[in-house]
Image 1 (tube, rainbow, N blue to C red):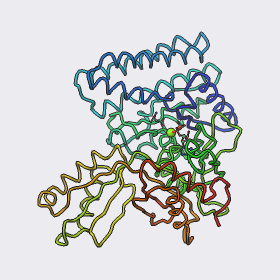
Image 2 (cartoon, rainbow, N blue to C red):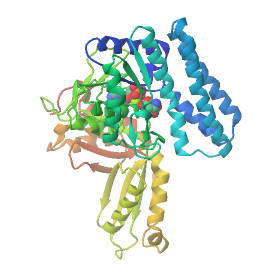
Image 3 (cartoon, rainbow, N blue to C red):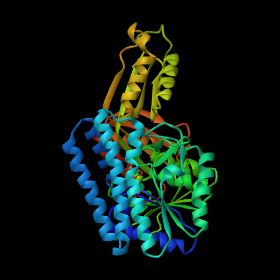
Image 4 (cartoon, rainbow, N blue to C red):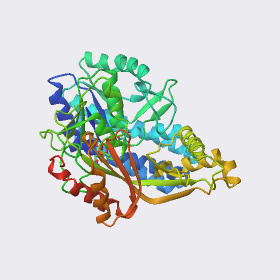
Length: 467
Ligand code: ADP
Ligand code: ASP
Ligand code: MG
């Protein structure tokens, strides 16, 4: 089971999360993976930015907020006889964070490896508190730092697991604890390289931690506890009429996550597919509700399931200046450069006649994207075989997802019409070759409106299939 930031965001929420784990633990062995308390990761990162900028007052203020938040949770959560040990554990972790922030302050630089080490302290704090609470309730539990279990590559900030090594450690550290009757409370979000350097799996990565461990330990099921009733036909914050989907396939859920549905980290499902480990997305605020079950195949096919969006993206366009240069070759070189810089291309669209093409990248990867393109294509740009690269950050991505869209004529037309009727400009279109997703790039200021218009046009809020 994985509990997200809001599901462990206060003493009260930690109590509820532990209650769920205790109850389910009576029926079968349970392992839990926990996020940092809500907003703590942002606070830690913000502190490190203050440190890099030499802003001591900013650091001090954040330290106080961090300390207050966890000490208050500790006081409210634990009976007196468990307080002292937990408080000193919190003190040690905060001191570790302060030490790294102090180093960054001195260097005036944030080495990615130190950032990963520091930011994982949020998860270590919440794991410590929840394990202490479980122990105080008579359920033997142990906080486990995933740096000792999840082995990753060295791509700091966005590492990938090395599954074979992780499996060995997971059995040695976690399965043996479970066998002893101890419930492991593992930190989400972090891992370490084989030689012990700390890493993290990308923002929102605790979902991924849980799925890595579920796969490594051959879990019967993975339950992801969050703050909504399950995976919905749209983000309920954007579309109030969105409904909870009772079942969804791995492919659909992965496409939704990949195209911006924050309810799952994009890489969560990959480790589970081979073993067909079923996943539930459930609401820790309403555990009695069924939630969404994610499975390999649906009993009844429905055409479209959900619409999702991503606001912080950028469209990069390139165009050959004449026919002397092969657009295909430029495209190949550009994609190769992006791949080497670890930039993900979210959508790609091209026109052969004008030899131009554009692709969409995440806002936070734009700088790396531009640097890699400009260096890989430096000569073509300098000799003006290529027009200067253009960047449009005033765009957003909308995606409609559903297994049953394959070979359904007219669907794309209805989606485009709905967006146009909402007076939103369509900038680019990319239908995935899987035909599971239609992705559309629109003007940023029309994104939310377009999402609502598509949700309405496809009757996604009825749960009925589109006809
Ligand atoms: P956690 O901290 O539990 O990991 P997140 O904030 O990462 O939770 O993800 C849950 C949030 O995802 C919800 O509060 C909701 O606003 C958002 N969300 C976006 N798209 C969807 C969707 N299609 N279905 C459900 N929630 C969604
Ligand atoms: N705490 C991390 C984050 O906020 C990981 C997670 O919660 O999934 O990104
Ligand atoms: Mg999340």
